[in-house]
Length: 138
Length: 61
Picture 1: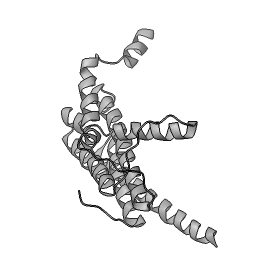
Picture 2: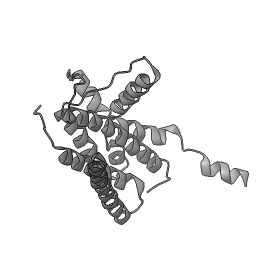
Picture 3: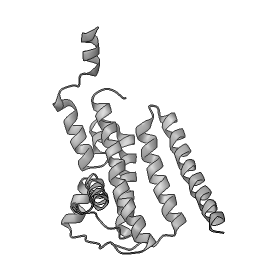
């Protein structure tokens, strides 16, 4: 009984799921494409990338980690993690010199939220790719 | 990169659309369920959007 339970909860070797998980972070939808879920991978790639590009076109601001009072630290670190989760989209944007100051305005504010949400949606895509890679989902 | 100036409604529409697609894809196990859930979440976003909009309108006096 205990052995059955252990088998049920044990993960396959890291080599079986780590590439899909890493690619999923780096390229939104890439993990699904690697796992031959082409349709879903393309949908994720299109949605997450479009959301990120819309955020850039609205001139949203990127978060940088700051240590100040608790709320500022939480917002900025959380936002930075959200931005970073977009993978190559974030890395390319920063490497190409995108630097938008956080200015007042509804459109800028929407843009900032679009950028962070694109990363958060990519985290969901990563979890899904992991579940597929370890055999919990089709 | 061109600058995009969207109204609140247009921005909320795009946000709802992209988020609904991803939620539909990652949460359900069959294509039919994914489509239904994607449409359902999109409608939920819009019900909440218009509901809160009217609530703020009436609450504002």
